[in-house]
Image (cartoon, rainbow, N blue to C red; front, top):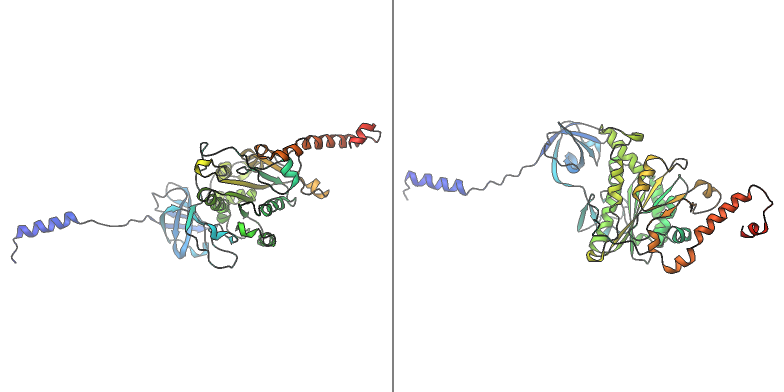
Length: 411
């Protein structure tokens, strides 16, 4: 077959015209320096804030600081495997955690990897750890009680499903005990419970898991553990990961969820460490300027959804540790202003043998009253007033023994 030169050129032009190039471009950068769980990467011009970066040896990091000439990112794996000059790749996605029924009864790290030696966890779904809180239209008022099983709380400081109730007090005053008792009390109530341990001792987490197992509460509970020995980056993402696991049950299965964050004081300390290492300007008590947003964006994800989108709920019990009973410190005041009330535990009451050591005078529940059952309202209606009158007369009695008959009778 003879082809003329002009035919050959037209065939080549047609081939070139119809050729589709399928070149995949991946943004890559070079590690400038690495240390203290932080890596600075040069060359990632179009990276997103909070994007997941892939390093050699299957180590990942989160881009937190977007600077003019480099990107500061926190590493989620073994820092010793990364060295200067290594290549960092963009992934185009944010951190996601596995979610679903397979996690129930398991102890996992904030990335959803098992820590309990019971084998791998097989799940079909994942959720990003950061997601937008439901809007006003998507919510409905809190009107269903969440019973803690502790009479002092259920009667005078009631908690509703979808509420955020802060548990605040000094160390060793029984804050975790209240949270664990609440989880145990959800047995048979069709409530999924998630316990997030941030900066706790590994032995403490093991004790809590053992106690939940003794009461058959692990069947409906997920424990997310970022112990004190783990990197600050994992402690930082732990509460968001726990919340994402709970949101799956709230949004996809329309169920009620209880999440305990134990505790957000250590979470703020971990975030402060990362921020200072990233050279962010420190503010009050050396915390970065966005430490309020750190907790508000987490706790605002708790809600009671309206019936049109399923009617599920996510209740949050954040825990804050105070120093010498000072509730006016920076982090306690921040979280008090975000939450719908607080249960204040006092060391003096604890050592006097009153347990749980709840100071009913300072404790308050702003929305839980609407969720109380009518029977409980009737019984507990005057309880707080009676208690405050008793405290007043008790203080009055210390001034002298000559009390009139009516006061003695009331005491």
